[in-house]
Image 1: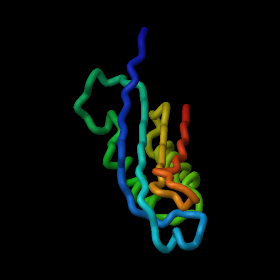
Image 2 (image 1 turned 90 degrees about the vertical axis):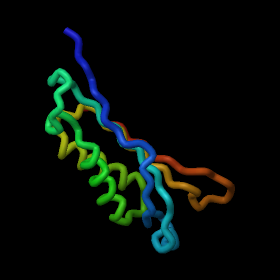
Image 3 (image 1 turned 90 degrees about the horizontal axis):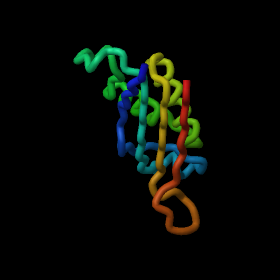
Image 4 (image 1 turned 120 degrees about the vertical axis):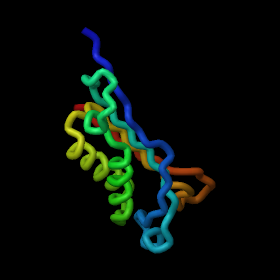
Amino acid sequence: MSIIYQKVALQNVHFFAYHGFYPIEQVLGSEFILDIETEFEVFNNGSDDLAQTVNYERLYEIASVEMKNTRKLIEAVAHAILEQIRHDFLAVKRIRVVIRKMHPPVKGEVGNSLVELKFNR
């Protein structure tokens, strides 16, 4: 018997937020780009029922709420997003959260920094 896995994801979600280790970052803010992926087993033979899948509007809402909670480290933001998805979608087997901070405050020209968390149930 084979298993079908379905992925529901949001890619390149843009936020302006106030995360950063340095106090000035929490004043000036920065651009962040998020990717969120979920995977789960499909048992519904292509059902047209939203309750049988992961609602990507809810994924966006989770990310939006957590991006508004200023933190020093984007690792903490990624973890909060991942934990809320785990809580809301118990059938999800895999979660991947990527947060890119555009133009981080380092000496040199850097396009973005990146934190990635993966969860497997």
